[in-house]
Length: 467
Image 1 (cartoon, rainbow, N blue to C red):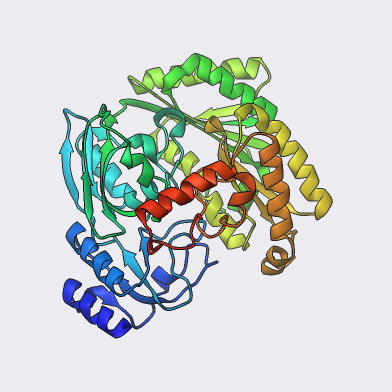
Image 2: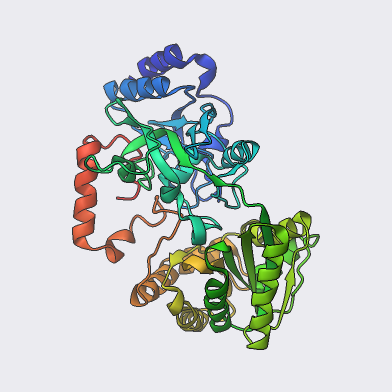
């Protein structure tokens, strides 16, 4: 049966785009190197029609499909299992910018477009596509939408869902739904777009998207501030919101240890405040650079007067701004260099974050003295990457094997008590699939299963993910 399917796929796509031999780890192993499967084949269709044909062929042969974008996911949701019976469908060849409509402030792209490519195409048109995250040089817009990615500018522009007006999707039956509308108002029944955004490839395969664009900001300034605790950071956020309003596009927080890891593994990256218990990255857009700088300096001056921060620096050039963001965006890479860790992508009411961190830090230290907490993230929208590294000198794999289950329960129970979510922007995938029923209501889970059954009755799209 598999030989017949492979022959059919080679006929559909050409033999060079159906990979079965050699090193396929770029597709079969996830970015964290935690999940490693074996695909029947890696197929690389070049058009929506070819994706539909692949889905139809796999359906006839009762073979499941794992869609994959840039393979930068962090929850094991985009790699095959180890059965050798799943087709890994890579959208990497589908990378065209189909159209830009400046008057409508929209762009229509293939799902395999790299996020940085989308940003650049918008910039070349004098516009802005604001989704921004550390993996933007390799993640794809289809992956961003299928996981409802967040990033660093959610505070002003929202998650990927808010930046998408329409989708093109290949269904589990191999049909094509063309919902590439650039309309901002369309009340003609259920919003199918919102079913597929965030569904992690389990309901359909996103092949194209119509995205929101914005006028490109003329002025932009970035600052880094030093604070003693998270209560001060939250108070600074309130102050910044009052005085900067919608101009505040980024508000990131980084613990001392998270930046110590960056200094250890990337000593060439400067850190203006290496002794600060917490560092806060702020970004502001305005009508021009001078206005942005004046507004940011004014807020930071007030914060210093009120004792909310101990020090601050404002970038005076694009290069300085990029250096500050590079410090923030290197934390995940530094963690990877340090070794495997227990990752938690959580969201909480901003007001609850200081108490959550104080209580949960203490509980984890009591469980394993010397455990190292890598805490950073998007404080402006309540999203923390609250990660747990093994004590200094302890084997990271052994630490995970011994403590991951108990630490997950401890952290997620605390998140639940504080009214938060166990997944803010990374999704559920395989990593959190078993925990989801403990923290999602039975009614919500039942509705999710009914939707899955309705759209993919035979369970062929990314099976055993999310649910």
